[in-house]
Image (cartoon, rainbow, N blue to C red; front, side):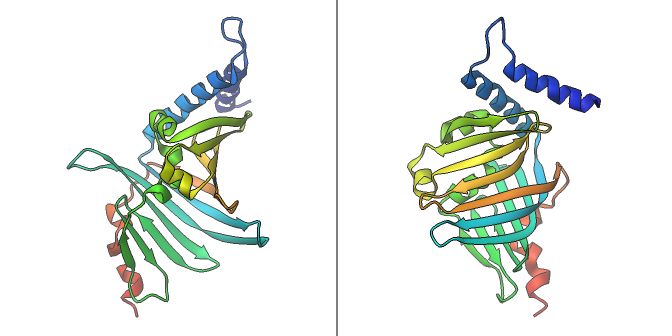
Length: 228
């Protein structure tokens, strides 16, 4: 057994073995898991991955799949010292499009558009869906009721139920799967109030690679629409 695997194995034994002669409660396990996620998230400044997105509409029995690349960046606003979260989805199949959320604006572009469409981010709930897995333990517990759905030596699944009314208006719950090896997200599933589901699965994950701040602006798209 490789040394890295031994550490993972021992860490998960710690989650299920008794402490001081007493078996860990599910709530105690959850707190330990959240602390590990907090520690891992605190180290992440950037996150990049390829993704597969599945949109399921159980009412009409429709299933759509799309593929692309995902970028996430966490930065400090020098004016008020608040943390800014930025995400970018580059959809490549079946239809090409780009969606960027930079913390205050939403930028959308597709090949049939003459130029990117830029609007202010009025409701940050959409952004919070994608950054929930990168929040601190304190913020996760503030925004969500957290339930430990399952845990094993390979993965942990948490159920996040929104506490705020804004969150409740947009979706019923999030189910996030974390890798037990890295404590980083591998799958995010959003279940809406009408039972529609959007699932995003990450692969080829890299953290803390340098990403230019312009990647999350319209400047990064100029080479695409100026060709026309």
